Image (cartoon, rainbow, N blue to C red; front, side, top):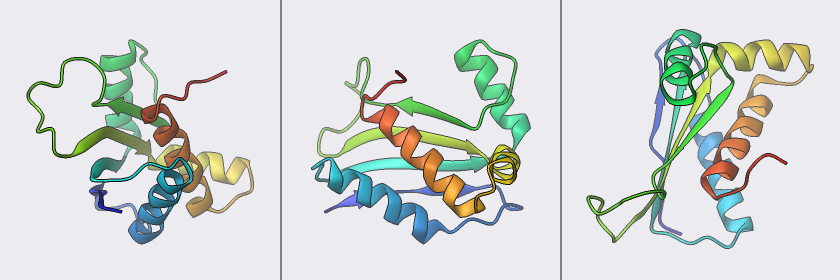
Length: 127
């Protein structure tokens, strides 16, 4: 499967990029989705997440994850040879808070949020 997963991590946060790529790959395989495709992931701080939330959701608050689909709307400017699903943005400080509150490993919480964000990019919504 030809999947491109660029991962941006603000320098002070330590994440396992190989593990994140494995989670994305596994989810796509489970859904029978083949490449070539791209999904990008960014691990950022609360300040940037709050700005994104305010700009795109109209809510002046931080969140644990946001997804931005590139398959919605007019895509005439994107090359057609690769499916660009979109971007998943995760707040590392929220990961720390939530993993502590839920008594789970930070890597497991990141996995959970990547799966949640990717679900949105694949068209799955909250029930």
